[in-house]
Length: 158
Length: 120
Image (cartoon, rainbow over all chains, first blue to last red; front, side, top):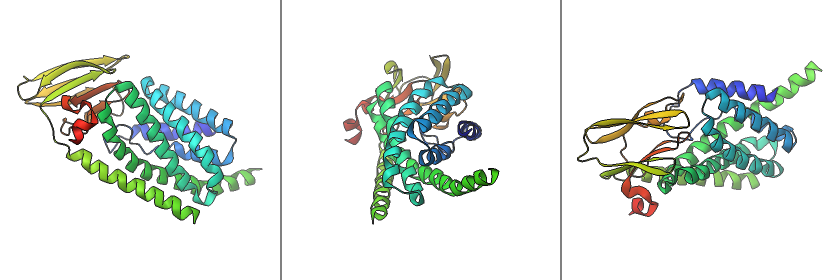
């Protein structure tokens, strides 16, 4: 169910051309779901949601080779956020999300440096840090706002 | 308290990112360029003398069209949905190579092969 939601968000975002033509810079709407899941489910459940989303997302977009970047980014992000979950409470969810986004960008960067063998790519990293802060804060806030509403809806539905 | 510290860390990372971004944008262009596919140099040219040309680079069923017009180089076409490399326009900063990450394509100034050279 959550995977389906995340995929829809991913597909919607895919249709919007990136306003900033820098590889790796992205809002990451689908990560609203990830952030929510991190705070509500067990680690292996979250990992499964994200993994299925990534693989299906790559198939949807038709860029299978992009999968390596997102896999590495997401892996680092997930590990980081699962640790942060113990440190940062729900009311400060957006902060955990920012750190998650930054870790995601770091993971992508590492893969890019490895595959493309161009050290000057590192000069993109500052751009990714800036965009990671903004995108992470945005998706985090979304998740934070959605969290109580979903909870209420679930309770009402029985 | 804890959250003030975390917010401060985020703010510092954000500002460092902004500062370094500006620095990267200001790195001056050079003359020779290299085109890399999957980490290998497949094409080099001196832009000050290079004639106008156009060629395609393929990787894993996907292609990018690279174009040199009056001493400037860019990716003019890509068969992917997001078109990031096309949107990056003409290569202009030694700090920021044109990259198509999924197709493992990089267009960069030859002198920019190591970060120290860019910094100097």
